[in-house]
Image (cartoon, rainbow, N blue to C red; front, top):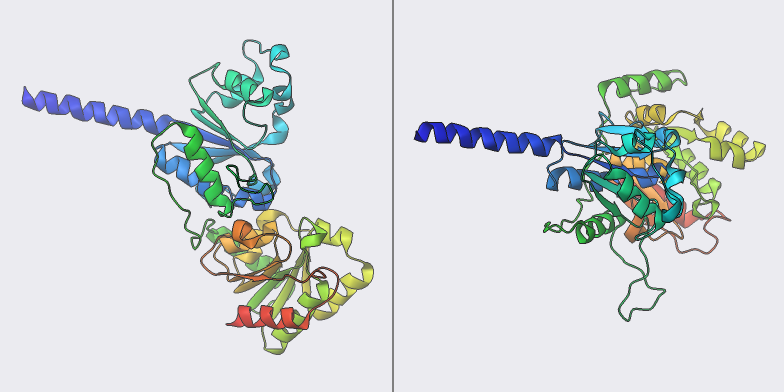
Length: 359
């Protein structure tokens, strides 16, 4: 009899574990690559603490398509393939029909975290209604950026917590569960390149005659905002000094740089070092997987390089590096308080970048 009871208890435990593992979560993240990379610790926290069988991200696939197989994220869904705009309708006008496509989008998820909408907004209420049409689901709305503190603190003062800790703190506070607070390990690799990535990167670099017997530093001189881009001459000067030390340099130029930089600026870059232009993000990742160092502004590609474990020097100007610094095992932040950060070159900044990278 006792043996039968033990077997039944074991079966119950296995059944309960299987049920937990069948639960899935999804994060609605409409941001660009940097925002998506900084969401990875939240996905890992959810997966671990809620014992979920998987966590997906719904966002722009050009940014999140690289995650499955290289990160803790199990799957991605395209934000452009979902009629999320319907959820912004006034609650009293929102309606769903049987078999509605919106219901199917969220039918697999027991936990839904959204960076779209506001707490108690029509969007949140409509999302809750939609998600619970097929199963019981928890919906949590998070702020993308820290809001001013309350409780007697001046409105101009904001949270000084790193953004990844801020996301997890918000999640814990709103989950209703007794979850242990956890600070994100800032020296952890969040993205692991595959063997195929490394081979693809070698192919791309061989096309521009990179010698793999020498060190390679990748420089990405752009960012999502011009005010976050230090003067191009700083990167050119650092590149020249690296090349003089027999270190190869390749400039990565995306669509934003191609559009913003003048013909003369593009010619200056070409005169100094090789360039790779307008690569898809998966190819950028492949190139970075072969780099021994990286220098860039506060940008999505800088977050990507750091998260991959590449030795990264991130140049911060007006952005608060305490809150938004990249995460990775070998990341150094060089912060400039110069008001003309983006408008003129700085010999002292160039020297600091060079020393930081080669230290």
